[in-house]
Image (cartoon, rainbow, N blue to C red; front, side):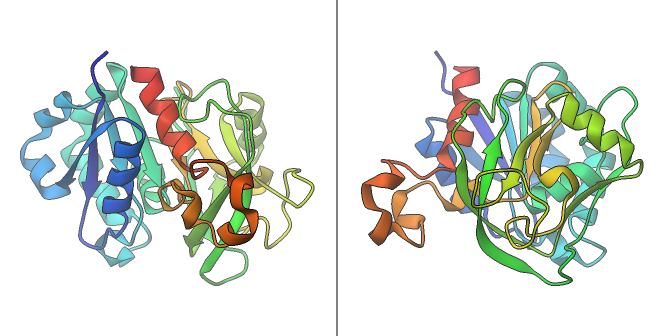
Amino acid sequence: MATPRVIVLRAPGTNCDEETAEAWSRAGARPETWHVGRLLEEPHALDLFQILTIPGGFSYGDDLGAGRILATHLARGLGDALRRFHDRGGLILGICNGFQVLVRCGLLPGGEAPCPATLAHNESGRFEARWITLLPRPGLSPFVSFTEPLDLPVAHGEGRFLLADPAVMGKLDDAGRIVLKYADARREPTQDYPANPNGSPFAAAGVCDETGRIFGLMPHPERFVSPLHHPRWTRLGDALGPEGHGLKIFRGAVAALS
């Protein structure tokens, strides 16, 4: 089968594009990193790729709010190209700032009658950088095809996933669209800090659209693709396995397209 081609979209302030491209390479894809300005000039180039990734960082310095300026560029300049990309089966991944972009340009949570969403400031009132445990819910999104809990790092100040109508969160959960949840030491979904670093209701750490093909998450899978990336690798040793936990997300997408 053909190797999936991945476009990793960067903007001024993006700082995780190289790690994200490396993760895709390790997962068996063929990534290319493009500046958003180049894609705005050549929107039909998106037709050459099967996966679009918006990595983490601080696009445009988050000057008007996290991800807001890049989201405006995508919605106004690439709206038609993105819809065409999604309609033909393309996969879209947003990590941290990329998740904020997907929410603020309206691609997530998605649906025929989407409820407006945002990623609000952490309940702690400060930037949170720590390692957390995540519970997957496989079945809908190709990015989450595994059942084992993940350890991944978070690093964000605006990560609390909220909907304009709080009641819709339960509907998203019932539909299996909250595909990653923050977990406590008992590996149960939690609202408690610091295991839930931002206070997201329903412990939401990653959500997908109704097709499963658009996926956004606040933790950083690209920062744990080797066992050596874990802060306790010398103590945990073989218990970490041969690969970092984050690589499962990238491998799932590649497998779905291969």
